[in-house]
Image (cartoon, rainbow, N blue to C red; front, side, top):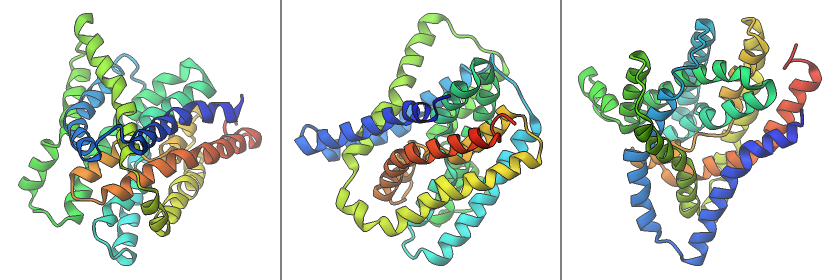
Length: 314
């Protein structure tokens, strides 16, 4: 296994899209304000389509380990609570609080964990990764909506909160996707193809938009937030996940999928989520971009460590 090549293959496309967006902005080829509108359109229309497609297309690869699901969700909940308590105590700028919490726990599992697991363990491991991610991604979206509503002081009565969760575009995509899985829906090929095509363009477009919104002066100014957040995201949490996965006796594939939930870069969708729900969109963009670039290094060393110590295949 070539650890560096696996990491580079997974991360480089994202970095390319972001840099491409930055170049377009520098050349004056795009209108930044217009791209903000495109970002809003992406959040409301394209991301729900992608969420639906990923759940719909995974229905034939359902391999469920209840223990893995329970431990993963529980670990993420503990992470959210701990990060929230820290931000409330130490971060004075309120719009930054939910952005930092989201960055710490919400990973790009969908677009990193699956290819990384398949690259290392082969196609037979795809079913385990797919089903785990099919549960984790909706959790990310529901918890993020609740997180931003909590931090921006919105109405917190159960009825109002439930309405906001259910009407969130990404949650609606997840609900339709899970419904399709439950009834084993199979769409005609002429319909499947365009839905799949729309889904495949979401991440490149989101990363390009992100690149057009990045301001390097702002990145330098926000380093006091970026460095500790990425330290927790890419180093601390992956380190804590390893003994936990071994404690519960997960198989090597399950162990790596669990590790990937915490070790992969911040989810691209966290940027439009933050920008659309009252968070600091600039900081969210900076964290996504820096985590994507930084993970080239951290994932390489993590995979190398797991391989050489036997943790990965032991």
